[in-house]
Length: 501
Image (cartoon, rainbow, N blue to C red; front, side, top):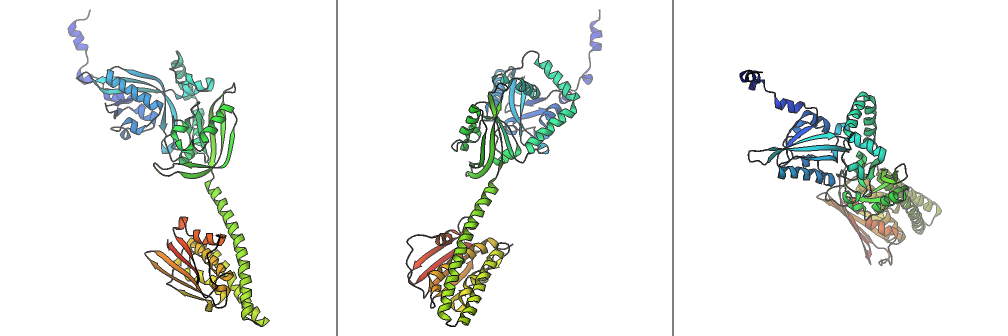
């Protein structure tokens, strides 16, 4: 037998006691400690490695601020913490899906992970829970094995069956022995996240987001959608029919192909809906027995292409209209030249000069889409064909940006064409006066016709009138107002100048 004094001699001294702080940090399983406000108090190295976060980025921060989840998983986790705080007894979550944000170094975005968590209270002197210790085990690989074998569904959220812990251990050992395969899997995941086209995986009858890549996040304004249904995460798309399309793909197990479809998305918090155009396919994901358990979404944002095609059509329509106007202007110039040039030789000389001046108008308008132009030059190339005695220009030098020069060139072309066909430039006595001024970066310009036929307001608006009145609106932020005064057409132009770089 051993004497009591010998037991005392063998007992370790305080100096020989283990360093429990060092032990906590080196434990191979992930641990964290939360206070009653669910803020991080401490974490060990295994926890930081599993979540790919630094310890200094966690301590003192609320858990649900760093890892928000308004869905079912977030509710279950919070309720487990509350049970520990209220009862002072341990609580566990055998299996809980919870998305984790990937660091930017690995492509960013969110990844769905599956966890088994145990929550243990640390009591204070008053007997109440002062801290919560959580031990988590990442069982994602095991859960994915189950889904591949049985498909996702009700069973996927049950606790691990007896023996599955051993299976997890064996799977971890196999994974460690097959590092090349693990690296390949990560490479495929990175490829998915960084693919230029948007992709998402929706599961279950509620169409819950299980996986989205970076391009999809960019399309929807980087909203947190993992673990939430389409209707809950993107409520604006339901009224546009996309939820019904997805449900139809799930029920009929037939893909749906969309081309250049319009979708309005709230891409900034509290902002207005922004229209985008997308090419996409909804592809059903099926079990071996043929039943669909999810939908794979893949596509690309083709907004720039659609807008370019629209702009091209607008330009073609404008070109067609300009050709007609040019022919009308040539006819008007020929008629006026005939009236003032009785001799054929004189007619030919005057007519050719004015046609060459008209050609210069087109050259300048083409050039101003790529460089700056002076306002006076833009006006002159439209009025030169009619002779200097037919117009008067008054105003300071104004350098126009390419877009401003092109827009005003189109506007002056319409005014000059209208004046040649119906207004002051259609008769020998008619004149055009153009005056402008610039104040506080804003151009104010007036076009006034005198000496022409009496003017009456048109019974309908033609393409030219609509172009004049609408050409400065939208991105230009200006306006043009037509006044059909009896003594001659007037046009008031107001335009904020962006300046020339």
